[in-house]
Amino acid sequence: REERYSCISAMGIEGIVTTHTIPKAFSTADFIFALKHFILPHVGRFAMGEPHSVVMDNARIHDNVGVRMIRERGGIVVFLP
Image 1: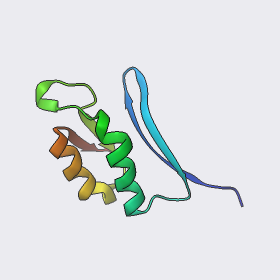
Image 2: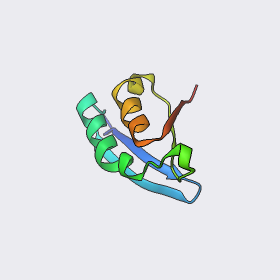
Image 3: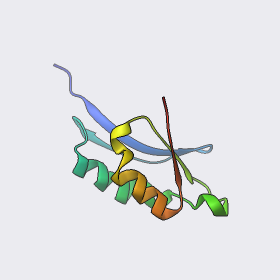
């Protein structure tokens, strides 16, 4: 069986800003750790027109803690269909 990895990343029009990859799937604790240490430091304030202030997500399971953390930084979250 092949090894599987999960990746969380921040991208902008200039390319990949940061990324964090782990073997297998993210647990809630893994996701919060990656968000806090790799993604949030790069999230800007949307109201101030700062870069990286719109966060797109494709997993509704992140709708609780992750969204709150991003909004506290001033960013907004858009869930992809």
